[in-house]
Length: 327
Ligand SMILES: [Zn+2]
Image (cartoon, rainbow, N blue to C red):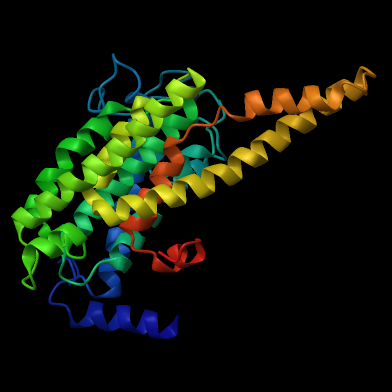
């Protein structure tokens, strides 16, 4: 910590101007980027709130309102995390409670921007910007999906358009993609190779989930996979490539299964408690299991896909080694 602070002090003193953006490898840049993430997180709250509403635009009205009293927020009520903390989680006007999710999303924005900076090779500004923006989009997809069981097209379809463009402009995104490497034959991955890797990742990610959904609908005659998940995975696949898609899907399935089982256990206990209160013990157990299986299944899958894509994007190999099959 002391060496870290000393490094910051040296940077600040050595720099010609403290207002110039410091070089990417310096800790000061890391702090600058994390602060950017905090303010982006504030904007993500607006996206989470407004994307699913057809009649609301992210840019107008430009200023945020209190959802209860409709009062426009002043700049001092718009400071990430701090405003919420100082106002004790209440609107300054009508005293309506402000959900803890607002500061949580802001802190998540800060965390993913900081993590993107940590994993990016110094100087690779394009990779830093793309991975930060993609992670921000994944945060929006996660919270909207938890709220409404749908993934906003602004994120999924937007990502499907953005992935090929980003891959062309920043080929380094796919520097370790198997398709791109095979095309490059020892030379650094160029725009064409990166674009092919991107399209292959989109086809594999979207195609795999579409196939799973199609088979599920034939077997169970219900929609097992939402089309939003297909679009999200296609978009994500465009950024993480074919190998990334495989890893992200495994992470998503493993984590979703754990939470799915926990969710069923929770419903089982709810039903059993209710049955015991009504004194119907005998046929109770099987009944409870059946109810738990029906209700426990209704979990959105998007947040787990987002988690998988995010982990792969940040290149968290330590997380991947914890999984089976040694990816
Ligand atoms: Zn209010």
